Length: 260
Image (tube, rainbow, N blue to C red; front, side, top):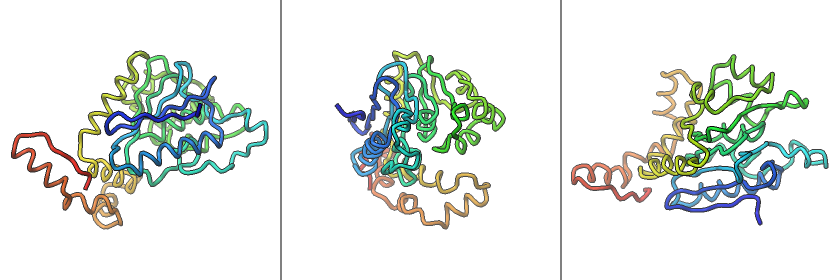
């Protein structure tokens, strides 16, 4: 059985990393995850993805240290999207929710950080333990974490390796929802369904503009949004879906999106 499974529910693609015992990620698993996210990218009938882990103990323990000990290099070909298929998938135009079912350690935490939103089981724990084994969290941890929570807290986590609870990271604004473990996928699917009910091009344009303006001040961000090469954003207002959205409000009915 493949380490990575996909399942469709309407416009939602559920991607499950199921590689017992700890859902560790080697190059082949990264490639399989990247292919799953490419499926999300390429299929116009899909609007949003969910990435979760198999079992209830680990979301992912991160980099497969057994594979590393057997000679797999840190810079081995990871395929589309880089490590874990998502951490460097810069062109992915559709939103992804991480449904964190258990411990997210090292590269597993980096996979969750690469998602647009996080829904977490209340028993999940998060840590960046790389410094304790002589490496660094260079699949996004040392870049994304200080930008998402207060820098001092991020530096503490990166330099001590301590574990943070889902509740703590929710307080820092990193996690959207913390729910009992048994309700995790229900909560993730509820959020994904709310997203998928909206216009596909609007969702993609939102992500496109957000990514293009990340780190800019407001004036520069507005300038970039108005003048840069942002093809999805450029066509939103002239799209059939924009006309349909306005018509549906005037006609007091649900819109029927076409993604064009």
